[in-house]
Image (cartoon, rainbow, N blue to C red; front, side, top):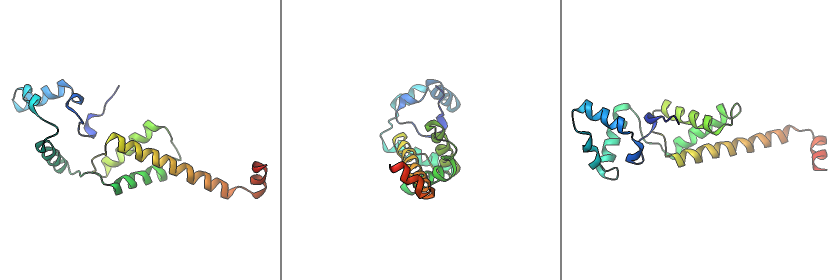
Length: 141
């Protein structure tokens, strides 16, 4: 399974391959075992995340950002593609383009499912409104 490590912060230390930890430790000329004591639930971790965001010019996602990405999917992608994995890639790319840290996996899933639902409702309403009355009557019968 291919993983895209550069698009989000880890939820736990097990998500970070030992090869990455070893590589960074070597660059910093420190022992990789130091990372064993690094706690992802402490304030220092959240401070480090904010420093990384600032360095790369990103910011945390807001609910409005989620709505923007949802609207983007509805207006630009869903009429071409409804594959969930493809929608996920497009949503993550949009967050990256906007310099916004992607939301959690669960939040991203809700954004995508909401976009699909909204698109489908809009599609069926438009289809219904454009259908001749005679066709609608036949469907009702």
